[in-house]
Length: 188
Image (cartoon, rainbow, N blue to C red; front, side, top):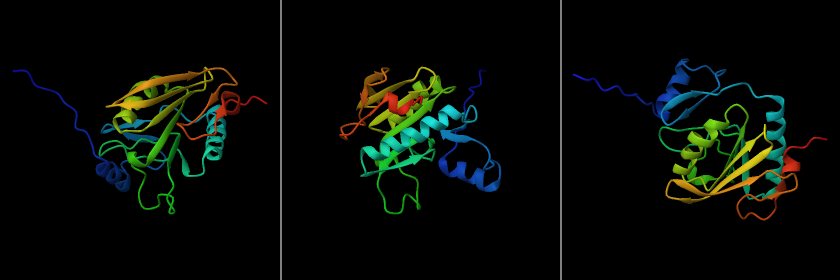
């Protein structure tokens, strides 16, 4: 007789109980993706940190009707709470003190990729599309380019734009102002 082997996925509630009980320590770099606890691959390097700081600052100047969160949780569903590098969310006076933003409150998610590029292009992209995130950017710091995924149809992004030229202008959705790759990958 053949035995079926399966996974036992955990919920967000169980994930938080694990942290409260000390099973997951505050020092661990993990996130909940599709019911599984995923270890973040490596420490954040200096280039990653610099791009994150510049990009968060640039996005803040694009539109003041949104709030920019860096490396904080976003609730996609009952079994997924990733921590994207940047989340552009609806403004709330309490800055989400009572609860993390849910997918419906998110305009744009950004992952800054070095060692996680493959994971960000597959698992994260599929997760964000299934959650209804309107726009998703992958900032590839090795190749110094930005991939923009948008125009959701069902659970898939149908439009992909790749920005690889230093002076190419990138606008978040139809929010008006824009930034360039030179702004993001400053080498001064």
